Image (tube, rainbow over all chains, first blue to last red; front, side, top):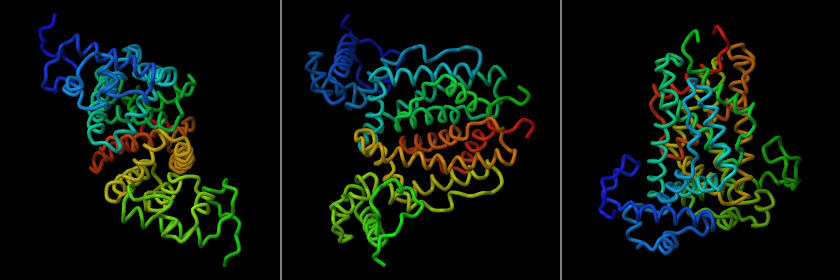
Length: 203
Length: 203
């Protein structure tokens, strides 16, 4: 179908222009293929437009800049299995940490994300794209802690957003200083140290 | 005196060439003045050499790249009062978090550090300089936790380096997403959530 549809419940709802799902998919696939084949150095809105047979203005209508498009590609490549609901905050965190470090290390995803963070330090539109992305990731990671509070596993006075920030901060800093953690015992220790402080008294 | 002296116990001991303390001081003062007056955009080894009346090769002998020199300037500008030994890990952390966010927010230091992190994502020599710096900061922050273990305030099975990584990760990510935390109550909550997980049983 080519009729523009209402935006799905996704992270770009705030952008006014309605999208054609086919064009969007074509642009994202083209962007993904270019990153995979040519790396970030070969990535440009121009190259994506050419490959997707879309106009540059169309791309810019939906993605205000290269960084926003890269972040979408990055997000789509993230394996779904980094998020799980095991019934234990420590286990959920362990799954998340293990999955994200593996994904960053084994694919080009870590390089993409490093690039995005670097861009955001000198370009205000890139900074806005990263800030929005970080905000949504914080909500997602926060659900791990919120479920723990709900279950009575975590103290009910913890700040779920802060807990999520600590997780994000830890993994970002490791990525940015090239110290991805892959050792299962160390990852367990990280998850444990992060959770213990949040535990309900007596648990 | 112009006789080269043995390197002081500082963080550049590993660099082979011996320094003349006067030249070193002149270079650092020039670098600091340039950053203050012209910002990072106006900062270059060439500009520093000119202002310090030093040769570029002299600067490069001691600082392998612009990032290493910027990091030294950054480090020297850090107020000493971010580190304290109050007898309580939570208080020490609160002092540190409050001090570092204030310093980043009130001076140009936050911008310098953001720039350094960004540079490190695309330049291997900048990455090496940042990695070395982060390693030393980790040791310094780790002492807060090590003292807590020593006092019996923290559990003796905690990983002091990991705890320091979590602190660094948290502040870095806040800086990189322009969310410096200045609210005393929120800072207290951060310090508390970081420490509680590490507390010795029964404390």
